[in-house]
Length: 195
Image (cartoon, rainbow, N blue to C red; front, side):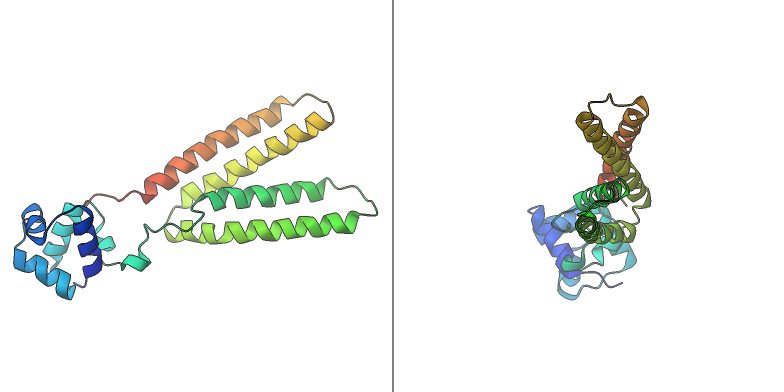
């Protein structure tokens, strides 16, 4: 079985282990550890033993350091939440717009905001789906949408000097709970599973 020698070496050195110490911890021979790090070839038993020793999934031993699923982009999952909020604000702003001479300018601003939101949202959503984080992504989208509705409704109520309706507050609280669950789901999916 082909595994990444650089991943094995990186995981070993991150723990401060020598090749001898890894051999003892994994129950493998020193020669096997040397061969894995030099050639990147291991039997299935050896790969399973290394994955269990490092407490990672077996597939993570096959991934190169640069293609690792544990690498996080600069914005991480926050882009998923922020992109959804920006698109929601643009849609709410456009739907509540009154006809006026500046109407075309506001439409252009809303379209630009929606494009920026999509540019943030789509890569993060694609990454979540590649990592099979369907539930976390869905909860993030729905929860952020509901929280943004609460924020928009709260600003509208504040400007209009009206009280916030209990329905809108309920949407916001529900959204906050969904976002909290989404964050936990996305974080737990990023932590390595034990073999």
